[in-house]
Image (cartoon, rainbow over all chains, first blue to last red; front, side, top):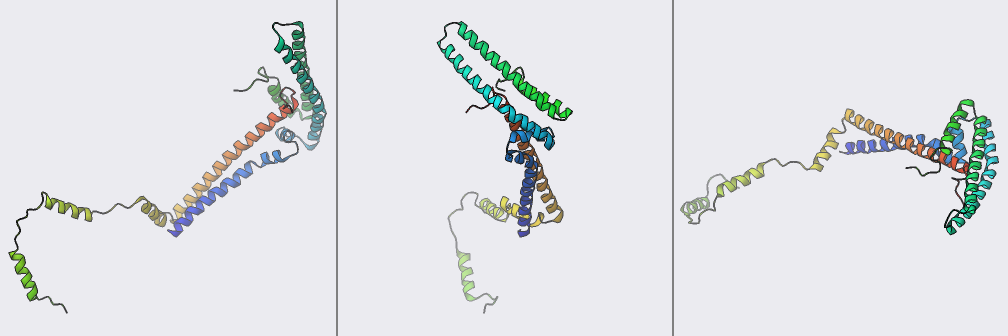
Length: 152
Length: 113
């Protein structure tokens, strides 16, 4: 009975140890991404197999793009506030509402143009094959017909 | 010291028993009831589940081939479950980071402070 109990425990300990070792090995790349300074850029480097030099160029482009993005965010927020205010008081489509909606559409187009320019620049710093893959992926994410819609 | 010879006391007892008569009748099916009790007492009792398990651990599991198979099977289960969950977790984290990358760059998706 004693020997049987020992074998029983040995099997359970072996299973737990095997589980822990394999799980930790499989998730090591994900954990190292999460621990990095900018996880989303670290993910980009791993996903598109970028060298350190390529990654540096991509990071520089990213850093240069972010202030533009913040500026655009502020414009969008201000425009949204104005449009909301006009809509709250509206009983019919006034020329002001028309103009505000046109401005919102212009901002959206401008925003998409800015993003596309950035995506193209980033893809050009990557090896050609990875650049094509990156562009296909990012267009799919940011320029789909159901762009901005909640997924099912 | 005891002897096998019947003593005078035994003889007296036999005499009493021979002369003893009772007019009380036995309850119905008395004999069958007695036999049933005897059968029940002699029937082999089924071992409990715990006793069977304990017996199995004590005698069957320690056999080298079975012990090795048992440990190998649990090891394989541990590896398979660890691999599947590890891959699922990695895929989840990468999906989240890819989403975050687009979110950082897209003013319409960027989280507002």
